Length: 286
Image 1 (cartoon, rainbow, N blue to C red):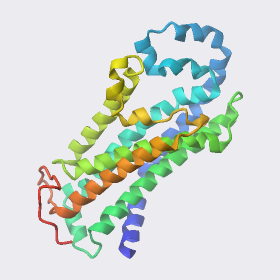
Image 2: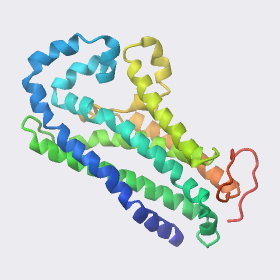
Image 3: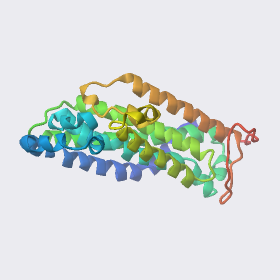
């Protein structure tokens, strides 16, 4: 347990600039976005016919049938702010999850670390905990920025607890992509391959989820997109079942990643290949 906390503290400290680099822009995004609701509300009479006249395919990318809810305070934040967060944090999760272990492995550092008494469990779960905490910290910075923006806006009046609810859904989706990227990094030849694959799934899922709002034939396929279960309008009430479902799948993917990390030899720098955990690789000595 002592080595776990050592790894956790060191990994958290190493992620401090990552937290600031992602959290501060999201904080500023909240500060900048919220005052625009006053302008939208003042020009509702001119803007509503424009939105109503959009073709269904175009409207699907600004909320679909819920596009006109942009004239309500909750709908504005859902469509103009929260709708973008799963993609942004999904990209972060793709990079952070794939690099959690694979980066040091490719540099030849991980085998040196495991030569010390830390052990694989402490390294794996210590870094996983630190990465999830960094994700939570980024979301908290984003929440602070949005809250300050709400205080600045003349037409928005929300308690801080209410605007926190969509971030819980963002956290669930981001954790899913984090675990997916980590699992792929334990199976694919390189960290870059795992990050690009997960990033592709994020973007493809976003496109598929939006198109399914206009094309009913795509709705069955959209059920397999994690972004379909993101609740941008959670300020009206958070449904806990999709959150728990995404977290359960993330836990399963984390288990696959742990199995892959536990059962194989650690490669040295420049030595890559497919590393499927169920093919009976020899368990490492650590």
